[in-house]
Image 1 (cartoon, rainbow, N blue to C red):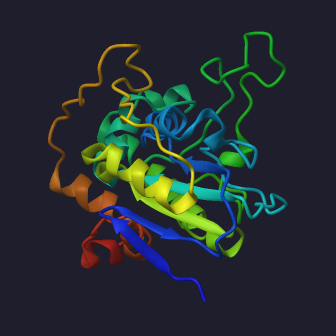
Image 2: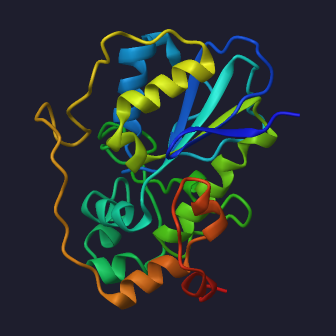
Length: 255
Protein backbone atom coordinates (compact mmCIF):
# COMPACT_ATOMS: atom_id res chain seq x y z
CA UNK A 1 0.00 0.00 0.00
CA UNK A 2 1.37 3.41 -0.96
CA UNK A 3 2.05 5.94 1.79
CA UNK A 4 2.68 9.65 1.96
CA UNK A 5 6.32 10.72 2.10
CA UNK A 6 7.91 14.04 3.07
CA UNK A 7 11.01 14.51 0.91
CA UNK A 8 11.61 18.04 2.22
CA UNK A 9 9.96 20.54 4.58
CA UNK A 10 6.62 21.79 3.31
CA UNK A 11 6.14 19.06 0.67
CA UNK A 12 4.34 15.73 1.04
CA UNK A 13 3.93 13.28 -1.82
CA UNK A 14 1.81 10.21 -2.51
CA UNK A 15 3.11 8.13 -5.40
CA UNK A 16 1.44 4.89 -6.37
CA UNK A 17 3.57 2.45 -8.35
CA UNK A 18 6.65 3.17 -10.40
CA UNK A 19 5.11 3.97 -13.80
CA UNK A 20 6.67 7.08 -15.40
CA UNK A 21 5.02 10.43 -14.70
CA UNK A 22 5.03 12.74 -17.71
CA UNK A 23 3.26 15.85 -16.36
CA UNK A 24 2.17 17.76 -13.26
CA UNK A 25 -1.27 19.37 -12.89
CA UNK A 26 -1.22 22.33 -10.47
CA UNK A 27 -4.12 23.56 -8.35
CA UNK A 28 -4.20 26.43 -5.88
CA UNK A 29 -6.08 29.54 -4.80
CA UNK A 30 -5.54 32.84 -6.53
CA UNK A 31 -2.71 34.75 -4.81
CA UNK A 32 -1.06 31.49 -3.73
CA UNK A 33 1.97 31.47 -6.01
CA UNK A 34 0.62 29.13 -8.68
CA UNK A 35 2.14 31.13 -11.53
CA UNK A 36 5.70 31.18 -10.23
CA UNK A 37 5.40 27.49 -9.34
CA UNK A 38 4.21 26.61 -12.84
CA UNK A 39 6.94 28.70 -14.47
CA UNK A 40 9.53 27.00 -12.28
CA UNK A 41 8.25 23.57 -13.29
CA UNK A 42 8.34 24.47 -16.98
CA UNK A 43 11.78 26.12 -16.78
CA UNK A 44 13.41 23.28 -14.86
CA UNK A 45 11.51 20.11 -15.75
CA UNK A 46 10.57 21.01 -19.33
CA UNK A 47 7.61 22.84 -20.87
CA UNK A 48 5.78 19.56 -21.29
CA UNK A 49 6.07 18.87 -17.56
CA UNK A 50 3.11 21.13 -16.77
CA UNK A 51 -0.40 20.30 -17.90
CA UNK A 52 -3.74 22.03 -17.50
CA UNK A 53 -5.65 19.31 -19.30
CA UNK A 54 -7.55 18.35 -16.16
CA UNK A 55 -9.12 21.67 -15.23
CA UNK A 56 -8.23 25.29 -14.54
CA UNK A 57 -5.79 25.65 -11.67
CA UNK A 58 -8.05 27.80 -9.44
CA UNK A 59 -11.28 25.83 -9.78
CA UNK A 60 -12.87 22.76 -8.25
CA UNK A 61 -12.26 19.63 -10.33
CA UNK A 62 -15.52 18.28 -11.82
CA UNK A 63 -16.33 14.68 -10.97
CA UNK A 64 -16.13 13.62 -14.61
CA UNK A 65 -12.44 14.56 -14.83
CA UNK A 66 -10.31 11.41 -14.90
CA UNK A 67 -6.62 11.64 -14.00
CA UNK A 68 -4.39 9.26 -15.98
CA UNK A 69 -1.65 7.27 -14.30
CA UNK A 70 1.11 9.42 -15.80
CA UNK A 71 -0.08 12.70 -14.21
CA UNK A 72 0.74 13.98 -10.73
CA UNK A 73 -1.64 16.40 -9.00
CA UNK A 74 0.18 19.19 -7.14
CA UNK A 75 -1.86 21.42 -4.81
CA UNK A 76 -0.26 24.51 -3.28
CA UNK A 77 -1.49 26.67 -0.40
CA UNK A 78 -0.22 29.88 1.15
CA UNK A 79 -0.23 30.93 4.81
CA UNK A 80 -3.89 31.87 5.39
CA UNK A 81 -3.31 35.33 6.85
CA UNK A 82 -0.83 36.31 4.15
CA UNK A 83 -3.09 34.80 1.51
CA UNK A 84 -6.24 36.70 2.44
CA UNK A 85 -4.31 39.98 2.75
CA UNK A 86 -2.96 39.43 -0.75
CA UNK A 87 -6.43 38.52 -2.02
CA UNK A 88 -7.80 41.73 -0.51
CA UNK A 89 -5.13 43.68 -2.37
CA UNK A 90 -5.91 41.89 -5.65
CA UNK A 91 -9.41 40.35 -5.39
CA UNK A 92 -9.44 38.81 -8.85
CA UNK A 93 -12.92 38.68 -10.46
CA UNK A 94 -14.76 39.64 -7.27
CA UNK A 95 -17.84 41.86 -7.51
CA UNK A 96 -16.90 45.59 -7.47
CA UNK A 97 -18.74 46.02 -4.16
CA UNK A 98 -16.56 43.31 -2.61
CA UNK A 99 -13.42 44.85 -4.09
CA UNK A 100 -14.27 48.20 -2.48
CA UNK A 101 -14.49 46.81 1.07
CA UNK A 102 -11.93 47.48 3.78
CA UNK A 103 -10.03 44.46 5.06
CA UNK A 104 -12.20 43.73 8.10
CA UNK A 105 -15.39 43.82 6.04
CA UNK A 106 -13.79 41.98 3.12
CA UNK A 107 -12.93 38.89 5.17
CA UNK A 108 -16.51 38.75 6.47
CA UNK A 109 -18.36 39.38 3.20
CA UNK A 110 -20.01 36.67 1.08
CA UNK A 111 -17.78 35.82 -1.87
CA UNK A 112 -19.09 36.12 -5.41
CA UNK A 113 -17.02 36.16 -8.60
CA UNK A 114 -17.87 37.41 -12.09
CA UNK A 115 -16.59 36.95 -15.61
CA UNK A 116 -14.69 40.14 -16.34
CA UNK A 117 -12.01 41.41 -18.69
CA UNK A 118 -9.31 40.40 -16.18
CA UNK A 119 -9.98 36.81 -17.23
CA UNK A 120 -8.01 35.70 -20.26
CA UNK A 121 -10.18 35.54 -23.38
CA UNK A 122 -13.08 37.61 -22.03
CA UNK A 123 -13.35 40.88 -23.94
CA UNK A 124 -15.86 43.69 -23.65
CA UNK A 125 -18.06 42.02 -26.28
CA UNK A 126 -17.95 38.50 -24.82
CA UNK A 127 -21.40 36.98 -24.10
CA UNK A 128 -20.41 35.90 -20.56
CA UNK A 129 -19.11 39.31 -19.48
CA UNK A 130 -20.72 40.31 -16.19
CA UNK A 131 -22.22 36.91 -15.39
CA UNK A 132 -21.56 35.36 -12.00
CA UNK A 133 -19.08 32.48 -11.98
CA UNK A 134 -21.42 29.84 -10.62
CA UNK A 135 -18.59 27.30 -10.48
CA UNK A 136 -17.03 29.50 -7.77
CA UNK A 137 -19.99 28.81 -5.48
CA UNK A 138 -20.12 25.89 -3.06
CA UNK A 139 -20.39 22.76 -5.22
CA UNK A 140 -22.43 20.97 -2.55
CA UNK A 141 -25.11 23.62 -1.97
CA UNK A 142 -24.91 25.93 -4.98
CA UNK A 143 -24.80 28.87 -2.56
CA UNK A 144 -22.21 31.62 -2.36
CA UNK A 145 -19.46 31.03 0.17
CA UNK A 146 -19.97 32.92 3.44
CA UNK A 147 -16.59 34.66 3.00
CA UNK A 148 -13.20 34.16 1.31
CA UNK A 149 -11.97 31.91 4.13
CA UNK A 150 -14.89 29.53 3.67
CA UNK A 151 -14.01 29.29 -0.02
CA UNK A 152 -10.37 28.62 0.86
CA UNK A 153 -11.29 25.81 3.22
CA UNK A 154 -13.60 24.15 0.70
CA UNK A 155 -11.06 24.30 -2.12
CA UNK A 156 -8.10 23.09 -0.06
CA UNK A 157 -10.20 20.24 1.34
CA UNK A 158 -11.22 19.35 -2.23
CA UNK A 159 -7.74 19.50 -3.77
CA UNK A 160 -6.00 17.74 -0.90
CA UNK A 161 -8.59 14.96 -1.19
CA UNK A 162 -7.84 14.26 -4.84
CA UNK A 163 -5.83 11.20 -3.79
CA UNK A 164 -9.22 9.46 -4.00
CA UNK A 165 -9.24 10.19 -7.74
CA UNK A 166 -5.60 10.51 -8.82
CA UNK A 167 -2.72 8.02 -8.65
CA UNK A 168 -0.16 10.60 -7.54
CA UNK A 169 -0.69 13.69 -5.39
CA UNK A 170 1.67 16.26 -3.88
CA UNK A 171 0.76 18.94 -1.32
CA UNK A 172 2.98 22.00 -1.02
CA UNK A 173 3.16 25.00 1.28
CA UNK A 174 3.97 28.12 -0.73
CA UNK A 175 6.33 29.40 1.96
CA UNK A 176 8.42 26.24 1.65
CA UNK A 177 8.71 26.84 -2.07
CA UNK A 178 9.76 30.47 -1.56
CA UNK A 179 12.39 29.38 0.98
CA UNK A 180 13.91 26.73 -1.29
CA UNK A 181 12.51 26.63 -4.83
CA UNK A 182 15.42 24.57 -6.14
CA UNK A 183 14.94 21.99 -3.38
CA UNK A 184 11.21 21.69 -4.06
CA UNK A 185 11.70 21.30 -7.81
CA UNK A 186 14.45 18.75 -7.18
CA UNK A 187 12.08 16.76 -4.97
CA UNK A 188 9.41 16.85 -7.67
CA UNK A 189 12.00 15.74 -10.20
CA UNK A 190 12.98 12.79 -8.03
CA UNK A 191 9.35 11.81 -7.42
CA UNK A 192 8.28 12.01 -11.05
CA UNK A 193 11.44 10.98 -12.86
CA UNK A 194 11.36 14.17 -14.93
CA UNK A 195 14.90 15.38 -15.62
CA UNK A 196 15.82 18.65 -13.92
CA UNK A 197 17.76 21.50 -15.49
CA UNK A 198 21.29 22.09 -14.25
CA UNK A 199 21.86 24.73 -13.05
CA UNK A 200 18.46 25.57 -11.57
CA UNK A 201 16.60 28.29 -13.50
CA UNK A 202 15.20 30.71 -10.93
CA UNK A 203 12.04 32.76 -11.56
CA UNK A 204 12.35 36.24 -10.07
CA UNK A 205 9.05 37.90 -11.01
CA UNK A 206 5.49 37.13 -9.97
CA UNK A 207 2.13 37.75 -11.66
CA UNK A 208 0.99 41.34 -11.23
CA UNK A 209 4.53 42.70 -10.93
CA UNK A 210 5.45 42.65 -14.61
CA UNK A 211 9.08 41.88 -15.29
CA UNK A 212 10.32 43.59 -12.16
CA UNK A 213 12.08 41.30 -9.66
CA UNK A 214 9.65 40.07 -7.03
CA UNK A 215 9.60 41.98 -3.77
CA UNK A 216 7.25 40.91 -0.95
CA UNK A 217 4.37 43.30 -0.27
CA UNK A 218 4.40 44.91 3.16
CA UNK A 219 1.03 44.63 4.89
CA UNK A 220 -0.28 46.44 7.93
CA UNK A 221 -0.76 44.38 11.07
CA UNK A 222 -4.22 42.91 11.49
CA UNK A 223 -6.33 43.14 14.63
CA UNK A 224 -6.74 40.23 17.06
CA UNK A 225 -10.44 40.10 16.13
CA UNK A 226 -9.66 39.79 12.43
CA UNK A 227 -7.04 37.12 13.08
CA UNK A 228 -9.49 35.16 15.21
CA UNK A 229 -12.12 35.44 12.48
CA UNK A 230 -9.67 34.14 9.88
CA UNK A 231 -8.68 31.17 12.02
CA UNK A 232 -12.29 30.44 12.93
CA UNK A 233 -13.17 29.69 9.31
CA UNK A 234 -10.24 27.35 8.68
CA UNK A 235 -10.08 23.58 9.09
CA UNK A 236 -6.94 22.80 11.16
CA UNK A 237 -6.69 19.30 9.71
CA UNK A 238 -6.80 20.57 6.14
CA UNK A 239 -4.35 23.39 6.85
CA UNK A 240 -1.95 20.93 8.49
CA UNK A 241 -1.74 18.99 5.22
CA UNK A 242 0.06 22.03 3.79
CA UNK A 243 2.20 22.63 6.87
CA UNK A 244 0.12 25.30 8.65
CA UNK A 245 -0.62 25.13 12.37
CA UNK A 246 -4.00 26.69 13.19
CA UNK A 247 -4.92 27.26 16.86
CA UNK A 248 -7.61 24.73 17.76
CA UNK A 249 -9.76 26.81 20.14
CA UNK A 250 -10.07 29.60 17.57
CA UNK A 251 -10.85 27.13 14.81
CA UNK A 252 -13.66 25.64 16.87
CA UNK A 253 -15.30 29.06 17.09
CA UNK A 254 -16.62 28.58 13.56
CA UNK A 255 -18.81 25.66 14.61
